[in-house]
Each structure stands twice: as C-alpha cells, then as structure tokens.
Amino acid sequence: MAQRRLQTVLRDLSLSLRESRDLASDAHHWSTPGGAVSRPHISVQRRDSLIELAFLKAFLAWEVFLEESFVLYLVGQGSPRGRAPLRFAFPPSLRAAKEWVIPEERSFAKWTDPRRVSDRAERFFRNGLPFSPVLRGSQNALDEARTIRNAVAHVSSSARENFEKLVRTKLGTLPPRMTIGGFLGTTMPHGGGPTTFLENYVSHIEFMAQKIIP
Image 1 (cartoon, rainbow, N blue to C red):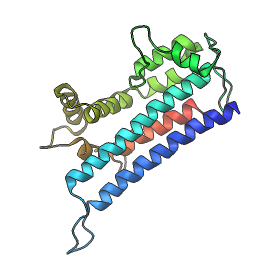
Image 2 (image 1 turned 180 degrees about the vertical axis):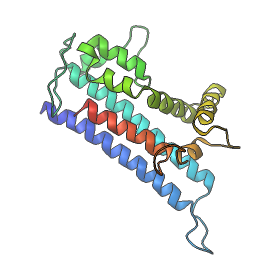
Image 3 (image 1 turned 120 degrees about the vertical axis):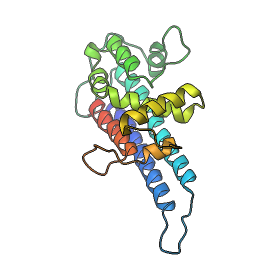
C-alpha cells in the first residue's frame, strides 16, 4: 500500500507533464496555417499564452510532486524499487509530516527553490537522500525553470528582468517583443536536436522525478 502511494504520486506527475506537452503541441498546431489559403485557428499571441500555461502546469505539478513524495518518505514509506531513506525525524502521520517541514518563519513550506528543498532534505534524511543529489545535479535547469515560472506567475519588473537576462544567456541576444511562451517554444541552439526549451525543462523534471521515486 505504501509503495502504491508513491507510485501514484509519480503517475500523477507523469500525467500532468504529458498534458503540458500536449497543450504546447496543440498550441503550435493551431497557430500554424494548414495550407495555402487556410488561416491559423489562433494567433501567435494566443499560442504563446497557451505555451506559458503548459509550462506553469508542469512546474506546479513538480512542486506538488516534491511535497507529496517528501512527506511520504518522511513517514517511512519506501519507493517501489528501493528502500525507505534513513530519517532523522519520525512524524506520526502525514499531517504531522507536512507541519514539521514548515519553516518557523513561514506559514507554509516552499518547494520552488531547489536549494531550500535540498537543505530541508538534509535536515530530515541522511545525506538528503533521495532529494539533495538529484536536485543539486540539476541546479542550473531548476533555477532557470524557476525564473520562467516567476515571470509567468508574477507581473513585476524584477521577474521580467530576470527572464530577459536568462533569454540573453541562452540565445546570446534578446529578440524584440520576446514573450515567455515564444522563448519556451524556441528550439535550443545547442540542444543536440530539435528540442524546445519547454521540452528541455519538462524532460528535466521527468528525469528527476524518476530518480526520486525509482
């Protein structure tokens, strides 16, 4: 039963990532003319908005996955293909586990910052396993994804500035009127294949999740 709960967490994330990919793919398809006289079903602006929603859906699903897998491991559950991590704390229930991971200075635990999650894992599990090695190994990709997530979720000058800095770093320039969705739908210049930035970040999430729940 315990292993099934972790399997369900992984399955739910996989379904959300598939839906995100499908939404982005549909957005591209709907915005592309179907023939010489056929007009696209949606505008480029609408396409980019849908791609942004697809990315946000994937990132929010990742946050839920981190919290749910963390508290399940914290109450002693083991992964389907491995043993339970060695714990430093022993909460009596899932509810207690969720309360114990909340920092004293906050009313809830944040799961967006990989450094904070890694530090939290090292407080509760020996060597932070299985979280810290996985998160630290994908630190750059997660930081970039969080920058994009903040730019989608927050209408602020600082979030926009951080996004534009990321675009310059990845593309070498900031194209005029670059939208977040437009960037996510762009093929990576050095991706080793026709991989968009959206697919790159979703694939990273998928890879990490399968390492956390093997």
